[in-house]
Structures are given as C-alpha cells and as structure tokens.
Image (cartoon, rainbow, N blue to C red):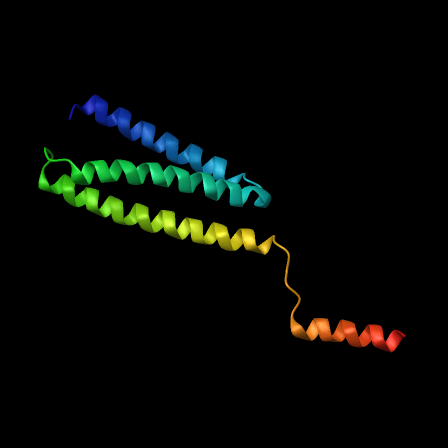
Length: 113
C-alpha cells in the first residue's frame, strides 16, 4: 500500500473516531433509544457487507476468516442491540398493576364507603 494512502486512511479513521465520540457524548438521555435503533440499522448494513466478503470466491483465506468473524460479531451486535432497545421501550409502556396494589386499592375504596 502506498504510504500516502495509509497516512490518509489513518487520518480519516482518527478524525471519524474523534467526531463520533464527540457526537455520542453530547446526546441527551431522551434520545438514546432512537440512536440505538439507528446504530442497529448501521450494524445491519455492515452485516450485509461482511456476508458479501465471507461468501466471495476470489478473496484469500484470511479475508474469508475475517468475513466470518465480522458476520458473527455484527449478528451478535444487531440481535443484542434490538433486545436492549426492546427492553428500554418497555420501560416507557404502561405498567400492569400487580395483585397487591390492586387489592390495597379495593380495600381502601371499601373502607372509605
């Protein structure tokens, strides 16, 4: 690889990492769930790319191994991310009253009569 291309690639990677950290650290807590859903979509795109790399015939064995690792980790990331997002969204849903609180409310109403 050309040294100029390598230096430019490292520069772009470092800039993207810094910018990503700055953007994520400034997200208010209310937007974390939608942001997680967006990153899950991005992980889905990387999963498709890693499937293409793992299944291509003209790449060397090392690329197939890295493609398999990428497929595995992207799948874990997507499934885990959607599981966590689902759990977070359930926190905002209506809560079902448990038996003790329902019985206490009924007893309090009967006592007030």
